[in-house]
Length: 264
Image 1: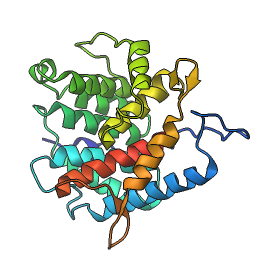
Image 2: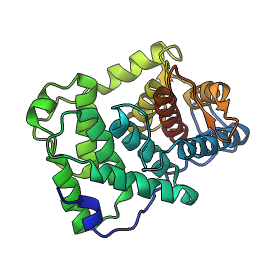
Image 3: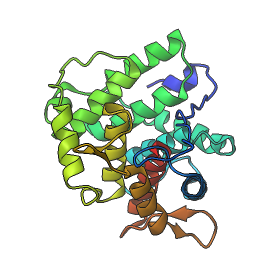
């Protein structure tokens, strides 16, 4: 199969998440205060350094059959961090993923992360539109229909980010009920870095960054920041990571932690 990305001439372009200005008089739920923001920025830099140090010589991440998913997820985290010093790591990951792309996708979640990463990395152009549309068609209909609800939603989000219509649209989730349930159990529902990333994305996307319990705003950014900062581990060789029972698990936890920090 021809290499789709190597055949399409492009340069990597990284996009910074929009920063929210710090208020002079801070309210709960608004932007982080400068001292916490500095710690968040430091943790994000440490995570990016550690991820780059764990990248394999061939450009991939991971030691198991989960390498395609871990590489796409790590690539997305580094691209979102928008750090030029890691552009070489991103380029090698793009080439590794492209060389192993297939038009018979069974692992829908891994393919979704790959598609989301490409939407961040490939500059806007007609070639980009064609590339993303072609990758989106790699998913087999059976894989889409049989996916779990969470993976199915992720795939739908990947298609939306790529500007591709979902041939099997799913009903829109109730917005207010989700946020109300989240606020009711806050912060006990923030269990694990992947869950924290989904929470941060939900709040930012659906309620303009505000999480309300009744009429009281919750300081969710500070809460998540403190959880992640307190659980960051320093690596002897440099950088920082979030622990898990396996090396692959540490890569996943660190990638999701970095994505969450960038949402704060």
